[in-house]
Length: 112
Image: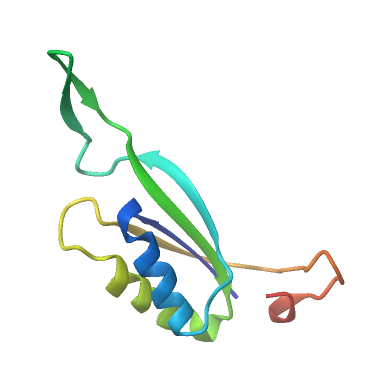
């Protein structure tokens, strides 16, 4: 099993969710997060004062799927989250040793 974490632009969330749903992946966790990468934020002016906004709003999507579907999910996220501009985000992929469904103690891929 693989865990995929994707940090994306907030306005791309619905596109990514819909694209994953279209390939049969609908179980995910979505969190509102803040951060920055190479872009280092941006400057804004508020009441005549300029200040640095260095932690930008992002969305983190987490999903655990069968290893055989991981590359398909990654390609889908890449295609649906990309704008071509700086700050599009990142995808991280982890190995998952075990998954357990709390309700009935299913284990492994059966728990997904």
